[in-house]
Structures are given as C-alpha cells and as structure tokens.
Picture (cartoon, one colour):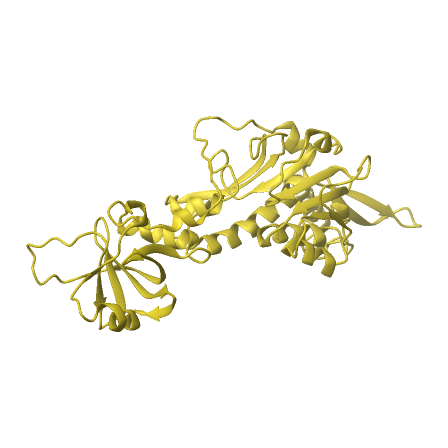
Amino acid sequence: MWTNGKTAGTSLKILMQRCCIQTVWRWGNDGRQRHCRLVSSLGRSWRVLFFGSDEFAVESLKLLTSSSKGSECLITKLRCSVCRSSSEGIVKSLEVVALTGDVPVKRFAQQNHLPLHSWPLDNLDGQFDVGVVVSFGCLLHERLINKFPYGILNVHPSLLPRWRGPAPVFHTIMHGDTVTGVTIIQIRPHRFDVGPILNQELHQVPENCTADELGAVLAKKGAHLLIDTLMTLSDKMAHKREQRQAGATFASKINTSMSCVVWEEQSCDQIDRLYRAIGSRIPLRTTWMGRTIKLLDFVGQCYISLSDQRRKPVPGSVRYQKESNTLAVCCKDGWVGFKAVLLRKRLTAADFYNGYLHQKAEGLFVSIKSL
C-alpha cells in the first residue's frame, strides 16, 4: 500500500523497470499530470498470425486473444490503483492458421470470431509483425518465415534441446524425467525445434502424473511464457542463444508399436511409465493364445505370494487375484496389475478368469516382440 506520493512514485518506477513497462502521461487543462496509460517497453502492439491445431495450442491462443482486448494494468493484471486506466493490449491484431478438419484451434477461432486462414497460405506481405507456432505439425518454408519482420516464435513443451520432435510430453513421462519445462524459440526452416532460444522455464514433473496431466500444465505455462516473450521481444531477440548440440534427443510420434509390452525386458517401473505416457490414447498390448489382447485399467505393482518358492515364474505369467479383482502379470522384476482387458469385447479381471483362466492355476501372456 503506497502511503504518499513520493513512495508511490518510487514504487511505480521499480515495478515498471521489473515488468519492462513504460508510461505515457496524459495532461489536464490545468497543466497537471492527470493519469497514465501503460504500454509495453517496445511502445507498440503486435500484429500476430497464429499457427496451431490441438488443445495444447488453444491455451496460447486464449491468452493471445485476451491480450488483444485491452487487458488491464500489466503490472498487476488488475485495474491500476494509481492511474485508474486500462493498458493497451500487447496484441494489436490476431489471425489464425489452422489445418483442415475439426481441430480445436479452428473451433476456438470460429467461436471467438478470429479471422481464419486455411493451410497452405496465400501472400502475406506486410500484414503481420510476428508469427506464433504451437503444435502445428507442418514445416514452414524460409520464404514464409521471411514475411515476418520479427520472425516466427514456437512454444515447445520441453527444455530444448531435450525432446525435439512431435511428442515431447509423452517421452518425458516414458523416460522418467523428473524435470521438464517450456521453451520459446525462433523458428528456422528445414528442421523442427532447432532454432535459437528466446525464453525458457523449468517445471518439476509431479510423481505419478500422466502425459495428459503434464501437458495441460505445460500448455498454461507455455502460454504465459509466450506473453512474457512478446512483452520484451526486442530484448529477448538481442539476447537469444543457440541450442547446444550436447544432450539433444528426439521425441518421435507415438504409435501402436510402442504399446507392445515385452514382459521379459520391461520392469514394473517401465510399464508404469509407459501406461502413464500413452495408455489414455493407445492401450498396452500383449497376446493370449495367439490373439492380441489390450490391457486396461492399470493399477501398478502387485505382490504375489507363490506357493512354491523354488519355482521362478516365467515373464508373462498371469494370475487372478480374487480379493482385489485384478489380473497380475509377471514382468522383468515383479508383477503388475490390470483390472480389465479387451479381447473381442471388454472383460473385467473376473470375466477373464471365469472365461479363460478358471481351468488353470496360471496362464501366460506372450510378448508381441517375441512372436
């Protein structure tokens, strides 16, 4: 709380320096300064063309949209208690490029009456200052990048150069990374995710989180980091840094082959990470008596009491735990459990036991890789 004019002026100056904000004072008829309007340190608003497709991209588009509607004081995100006026938005105009089909970015643009362009684009000479790409999936040619005086920015959900490529969040979970983040880079032609870094923020990966949960958090964090970058874009560009080559990894697109469990090679922890990474989109798979079976409702590591301690179970061995209604499967270093499977139709663990395991004390899931 500012107690006097001198303290208020000093505090406001410090806040403006920290937030890279400058003031434009308006004068009254009596020659006194009446109130101010707050603008970005660049003294301008950006004409932005946004490229995106999925829900991750929508978070950045939402924040750009709100930033183009005369948002209030950028210091506090509230109406300024000193000047009682609103700031100019950092986005002067916003238009969207979306791929064909009913993608989330296209729906958001239509619902919010944003000008919408189809891909590939027509001539854009002089229409935009900067481009923003988030989860677009298409390479942008050099001639298109050169249409933007301030280049094209990309919001990427990893700490580049780690996990370049189309599926960084999935690989972060699958490989057990404990730290990730978001990175704002400048797009370069011909290759994905290799441009210079303008801004970067770390994020601790919560224990046992899924790729969907982590992606939602990084989408919001990336959107705010994008706005922070646009507020001081000239400064960020002046201090950009090239990505190092050491530590670069590639996050390939997820596919069904990744879902095949190899019981002899994968540990309980690896299967757990695999399920949290891709299980909501691609069910884990194995085979039962020569037929592919999908493993559903993973419950983690199980503890099995063996009647014969001298007999080591074969990886892929499956047992029914009646007390928890769980199918326990032996892997490299223990047992993991599933509550249901898909074999022609969805079956609970009890259904599978009654239909397929009741005549045996133990069955066997065979790894697809070993067939």
